[in-house]
Length: 326
Figure 1 (tube, rainbow, N blue to C red):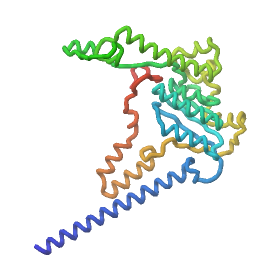
Figure 2: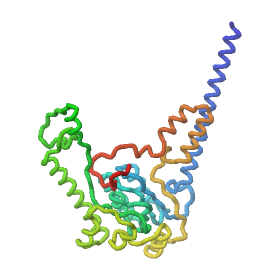
Figure 3: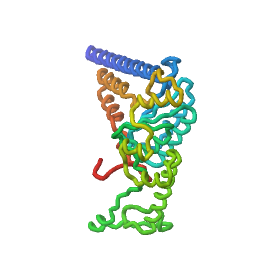
Figure 4: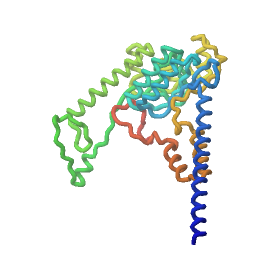
């Protein structure tokens, strides 16, 4: 019995030691990978002291993001970044988030030349983002525009009536929390919402007119809510030139006297672990190899592609979302 107890105790000690060294190995590898990522990032300044042109990418749905604003502020203070090429590929997002991003990019434009390249789309809030640039370049078939705002909400009043359910509420005023989706929207609530939408729409149109130097007649043609191809947007003065990043680079050299021989380096707006795909994948692989497969699965689920897109967009939207799309 004593021998068995000693054997069990030895096995437990060995298991604890093995777990300790596994965890230590994981921590060392992850820290090493993170250090390499930071050292090679233009934001760190550790990759060298050579000047460069920063490539910033805005893609997907646009929301308010304080960290993004701080990182753009940091880029503006960089003594190495000589100019910024901003790639936009977004259908828009919230009006407040789009305005915040426009303001951040406008401050950046005040410090460095900023040229915009529209990849697949710069619609609605995505176009608000593009307006921050000194010059807008788009592909022939890029989608541009969708100048307008909307407020969407589900209304379950008819469904609840059919199943015999009624939502009761006591309000301080009739327009408090209206519309709530559980009762028919009153004309007063509709009018209140419309005033918000029209106010934001006027702000959006004013931004377009000011940044693109449009007459009232030109603005009316471009601001009816439609999207346009890059080719159509040229005639509407919504973009300046057809092309890609090389076109943008040539413009920087021609109009802003930027040395086009400088390297163009990606300037990542997020440095968190889940936003570094190679580091995330490597960490999951190391955890799995170390026998910590449960932790690896949890990390993989936490940082999975498209996780951010599952959040709901609430409030007033500047978003191109044609009927029938997901």
